[in-house]
Length: 469
Image (cartoon, rainbow, N blue to C red; front, top):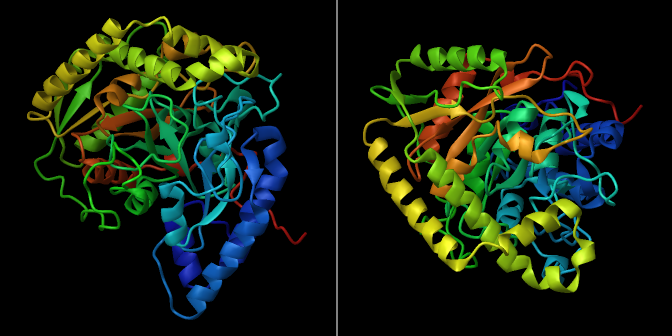
């Protein structure tokens, strides 16, 4: 069995009976058995339940029942999202009865309805913000390209596990870059949907007015498939947009006449890997070769919106965790505790002003999108940092994701090349609100002519690990 690394490949193989869902799961499980001790992807594995789900998928195929491309496909879930098999830990020892509820979040329920095989809960930065700490009782998420390096965060295990082939897609969450940053460090595709497009009930919040749930996968096409299943209104989420759940994704868009805004504002300075500039310009030219007209742009109010975004999620995180900070301060890791306590120092006036800045930023960006259809810029201008001496503040200086989170626009990371050390680079495409399908279509167009998103670390290989040997 040649192990598929994309959802589309797996869907084709399952339907051609090249392998069964049980065999596909066994291949992913064997890879997890072999690699997870060094990568720290899983918090909890649902091997028994996953095998039952794979068998159910095979029975459905046998009688002609087909729920779509996710049927029988192994998918992982970030451990801030509820599942019925196990309580949610958020990679923290803080106790909160709400996290102990064992029931599916809407997004997980929709995966199961589509026939997906949920393989387990995946590592995250503590409560989606605390820097990993090897003294804490949770796996330290490492990068498949170099295990001395960090996988990124906060959807760490989601990105690392996809890159390592432990599952073919994953759910993550993104408040300031938590899908896009690990996706760029691990060399895969990660999509932050438009705020409100995907329900976030059953998810431990970080910043309620910015949190989104979204897909991580090898390809933009696979991310589109996952998004099509999880998108749509859910009454349990007060922020959920009035878009019908289960409605088919829009048909692939034509790129004829589209204009791509190119933001080079962050390509200078000490935080930029010299090889990144070349990779970025090559990606821009690749898209131009498909007929997209190029226009130089500068993201409006970049510094102000970024600051407002950080103020917002800091404040909202403190508000959510305030009681636990008072009653269980020692249960928080040092990094998470410091971030949340910092939120407590932000006054109401500053928070209100930040919302005014975000609204003004949305207006300015909407006007910019009247002139261009998409914008391309860096996700991060460096590679995954080393685990030893990890300084998240230093990492943040080369990351450009908070801006689009604060505005609520969709953005997707796409792999665009490698550093001199052989570590992945990525850039992000952004689009107008609710233009997620167009965004992923253009990302897929780029990926048709490149293979950066399909490459795997040489140490992992392409062939599966045979679970029967």
